Image (cartoon, rainbow, N blue to C red; front, side, top):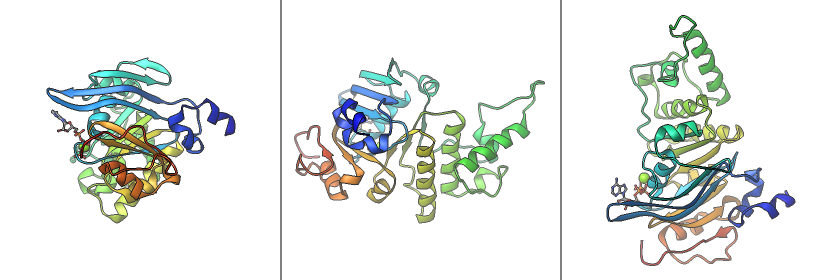
Length: 281
Ligand SMILES: Nc1ncnc2c1ncn2[C@@H]1O[C@H](COP(=O)(O)OP(=O)(O)OP(=O)(O)O)[C@@H](O)[C@H]1O
Ligand SMILES: [Mg+2]
């Protein structure tokens, strides 16, 4: 790992052990977003490496969802550069993002309650037979395989989504991203509405995604979840990325200090405070 350290950009040097690869899957440089008179994002640089989980934290209105939307093409950036596998890309629509291997799981999940698990997994991407009819057997086979890989426990691949728990539904939404062969998966508050057991299930699922070499960006307000699952934590405040912590070398007080703008010692272990924006949050 020592030789990797020399080649990596400074901002991720402390994360070499978890990133495990020197080439970022996704890189953002100077990303900004303006909504009318609101400057929602300013000069955001970000790198996501294969097989790492990055927590994206910050107060309400800090710009987390806006940042995810620029990457998912739902709300394209006003300025900045995007690179996927080192290639400069223009993410202007959700379809572009999907083609680049970027999948997003939103809180509302967009699952169809009246359909079963397999039909939801393949909705809009159905597998057909040579005759053009739905190839239910093949879809169910692949559905079972992906659910097994992710260790998702369900009554059956034909259970109606309306009969599933919040955690199970979240798992189906994540499994969909795998079937679409995502390289980067972003989750906006995946455990916000879940109980203890369901949260554990979803956090385990995120770990399974990491094992697949996927880069995962998770927005969360829950420090316990972040510390449970993330390798790295990025803090947003007032539209700026203000800190980048290696989870193994930090604690929740340091992260919370960066979120609120309380002074954080720049030489605190594990912290890489890029800039602390002025003013109160
Ligand atoms: N469609 C929009 N039009 C105008 N302003 C917007 C829009 N979406 C977001 N904003 C503004 O951009 C800023 C960042 O919002 P964003 O939703 O990204 O915050 P967030 O960090 O996701 O917050 P939360 O934790 O509450 O979800 C806020 O000031 C918000 O009011
Ligand atoms: Mg949000």
